[in-house]
Image 1 (cartoon, rainbow, N blue to C red):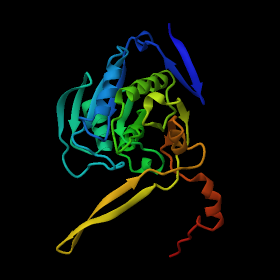
Image 2: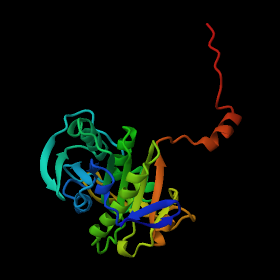
Image 3: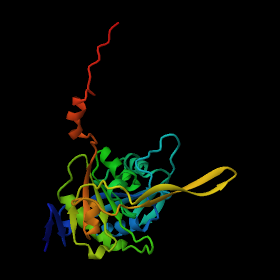
Image 4: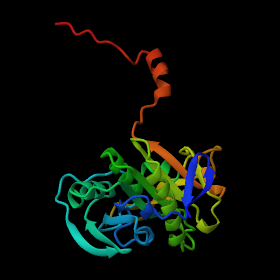
Length: 289
């Protein structure tokens, strides 16, 4: 029998419900990511979803690792698409492009005549909380879907980088719980969800709606590694923020919750408009001959 689970700050999670009983036509999910077509996080979600006959999954992933490229798109060269065989029991294609372009290729070429109901990006190796959402290829892939009118969810898993041994399956099972919910209650237009699983996923306290944290990253700079013949070679150094105000994705994941952050396509800073009008930024220019 289908039963309702706990409502967590307005997010209703449904467990034990066979999706196949709700619709004769399986719910079509396109899986993408930025870690590459061979990422274990991608395979874990595909395996869990394909195990439910109420879902049909198509995997379209980058041919190579593409972390940190944000919403970069490929427009000045040809893009290669190759059949990859199955990933987690689902048919898969590899695309030689950035994550956002992979989504675009998936929607307009691979699935041109078989559009998905939802695009899920991830599960990413490493969290994408706070300001990292601006840089994340995982978010870029989900955002591109929303830009094209298809609901999108971005998934990431916090890691202990000293001993990275994430529980992909546990995060994938919780992903299906979230997808079940979104399937029953579609997301508002123009909204994508940024979801981050804590490193001890099995001990997670539940999903929590949270706003995007804006605390500075713990580390965010480039360092010179070496110099040869007058050429300096630098590499990136990054660490997540150590804390933030209450109610953000940063504090939620630190407290053991799974933050779910709704992100919109409209980046207009509406609260600044009165001030900008006040200082005379809005002007009418009279052009005279």
